Length: 103
Image (cartoon, rainbow, N blue to C red; front, side):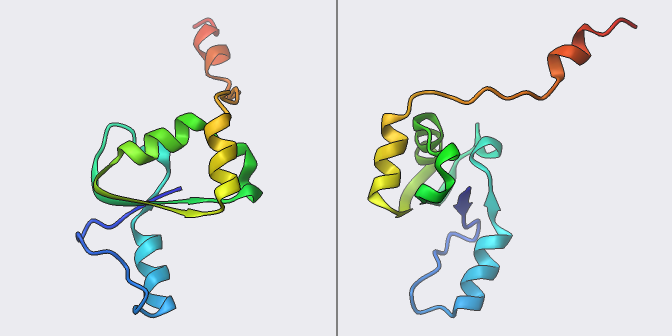
């Protein structure tokens, strides 16, 4: 998940938890959907619990979306796992089968 704030305002530690959740949820998109876009600031959460998403290419894409500020939040171990993982998981969407279907 990649977070950005379109209002050019970052959520600070002095904001209430409810407000932080509201703003983060309103402006959250996936790293995949962010490809080809730039944002003033991005926040990328990294946790070992989501080990299937810890991939070098996803972290790189998330980092390169931020124009002025990029914040990585989470565990150092999760970042280490992601940086070392240059494998991408195969996605089985069924697209190839649908493209090859006659008529």
